[in-house]
Every structure is written in structure tokens, then in C-alpha cells.
Amino acid sequence: MEKKKEYNISIKKGVLVFTTTSFRADEGSVLHSGIYSYELTSSLTSGAVLVALAMGLVYMGVELNALLIALGVTGFFVLMVLFRKYLFFEEFLRVEVDKDRNLVTLFKKALRSTTETISMDLLRSIRWGLTMHVPQNTDGVGVVKRISAAHGMPIPGFGETREIHSVVFEFTDERDFMVFSSEDQDEVDVVLEMMKNFVGGRIAKAD
Image (cartoon, rainbow, N blue to C red; front, side):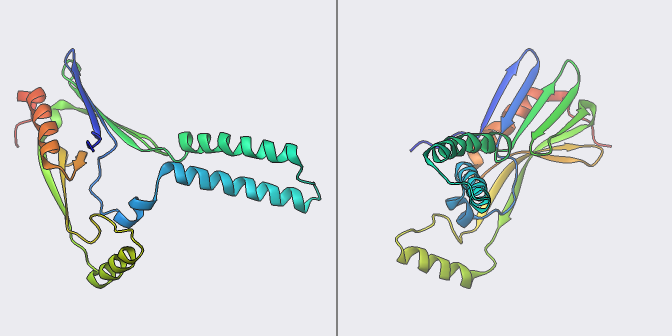
């Protein structure tokens, strides 16, 4: 199966726009990622809200008739959509490099969204980065692997050393921003080359 591309990049009228949902190199959890999904969390939260509401109605002596149950089912799907859209959404990063305005803008969509606007005159380099994650608790890894295998549910990649490649913007004011990360170095190389070619001679000179 073809791997889903985790970024989008476009160049129009002197402006490079790059968006991605992959811009971190933290260790994370392979076990957790194999179970977790935003849809599952949204549905569990919706269910918990409706169960609490139903218990409150029963406590107040309200009979749960067919109409209330039908409304509850409808409410479940409405809440699930709202939770997925406004609470359990996938964070993303948007990078805009505008040559005409001489600006680099970094916008991160999250529960607390942030925007950084920096002069291109401060851009020192666009470089490749590497982060290594080596398993620490090898005994625990072995136990989890045996249990998952015994249940016929092996976890791909669990307990293995992970290499996270990244594209990093470095500025002369000592700020660094990781704008893309992937375990696929070829993918990172493509993004890095496109960005460096676009910026060209606009990189700041070393002090």
C-alpha cells in the first residue's frame, strides 16, 4: 500500500507555502499509536458525556423512553463530529516564505495556535537534522512483544531503534524551528532541497 504523503508544498509568485502534520521528533509511543486515533477518542468522549447525562436523568427520576434514546443516538454523532473538529484535531504546521516581503511566517494550528513572523535577513540556514530514539527498557519491550505475539497482534516497529530525519530552520537570533520530520530520509531530502533552492542566496551570512 502506498504511504500517505505527510506534507504539501507549493511555490507561486515568489511565495513558498509548506504545510505538514509531521513536524516533531519526540519519541512518542508505537504501542499507543497502534491503538489511538482521533476518531476513537472523539467517540469515547461523546459516549462518556451521554452516559453521564443519562445517569443524571435517571437520578432525577426521568424515564429513558424511546424518544430520549433516539435523541441520545443523534447527539452521540453530533458530539463526535464536534469533538473531532474542535478538540481532537490533528495539529499542523504552515510555513510561508515570502521573498517579496522578505519574511518567514510559521503558523502552528493547535489548541493554543501560535504564529511567528521573522525577517529572512535572520535566516542562517535550512539544514538536515537527525534524532535517534533507542529503547531503554529492553526487558519490558520483550514482555510486550511476547504478549502481543501470543494474542496474534504483533506491533510493527515496537522496540526498534528509530531514526527521525528532519528539516530545520536556523536563525541568527539562536532560534531553531523543526518544520518537517520523517523516518524516510529520501522524503526529507526532497523537502530540504526544494526549500534551499527556493531561498537560494537569501541565507544570512555567518557573523
